[in-house]
Length: 452
Picture 1 (tube, rainbow, N blue to C red):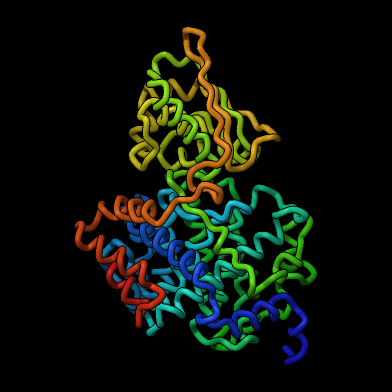
Picture 2: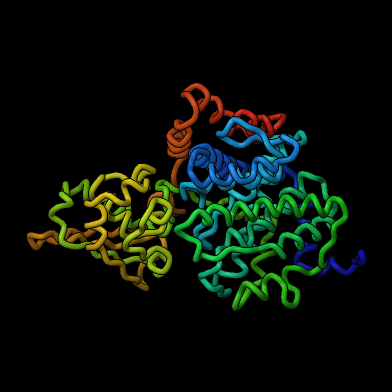
């Protein structure tokens, strides 16, 4: 690849941006939001470490692990950095409790944080540099997703955007920590682009955690390969038969570079109050509010009408999930447990609860309809009682959405509750404090080591 040729490509412009970015230039609010993203990610990884998906993946792969340089979060063992990046991201997505960039229904922190946390344990990384890499990885991942799905762009809803773009973001984030040259970063981005993958038919299976984990794993591997001279094309993103051409019906390349360096996608990141697909959250809010307001006895419910954004119905109209992993994208299940239990937590996503007779019976009486006038973070729910009464609730902005965000205290509570399965209270408090200080620690890898 010639020295001049790539400088006109999108990959080169991103590489120059990443190479020139400095931690000191990040605005305070960006550093804080990136820290919130990291706190949320670590809590999710701790909570998911004992999930069957995380255990199965570890049982399959750990015997092939290389040099033990990175921690398996919440598992008390060390593996090679590539295996750690994969398994820790599987853990962080196990309960579908991860962050979400609502504009693209993207889960940005998982692939990036798992990748750079593993790398930070292999070689000393200052906390401020770790946080900068997290911001940069989320930035590139989100901008690529925006370029292929947010209007005027158009993308088939069947693509899993975290899988398509997460690896590219991870490659640039890892490249920043490895000190890659702009040319090497272009190679890393191209390697990651050619391994982009993920489709939504795998929702309702353990593969829903593998897709983002594969992205983070391939991004780290791409950066390491580029560091040692493994090359790629100069134009992997906008080239003929390249990333944008293949994954978008109508792309918007300008979204990748417009206001780059002055506008930060991490500021649009959001955090989940419930362990399921974000498209279901405002529906849960409405059901919990109705139950609390009217003291609904689920045995008196004749039927429930849900009106929601088309994405919610497209992705989560699953009337009868058979097990816990399937209920994460089931409107009917979360309506039923919200009305029966008055709660929507991890316990409500257990297979035993999914198969409970009263939950199964109520799910049969829930209908979901797409409504063009309802925004992605909104929902309209009507509960019809057997005595003829109709109880109605409309939620305009679900809890955890950009317009109704979770605060720092909420994230602390979420982190603590998720970590309780494998840590005592003192360790949880200490680790949580370290996570909030990630940006000023002399060695970011200490957080990973403390999370064993």
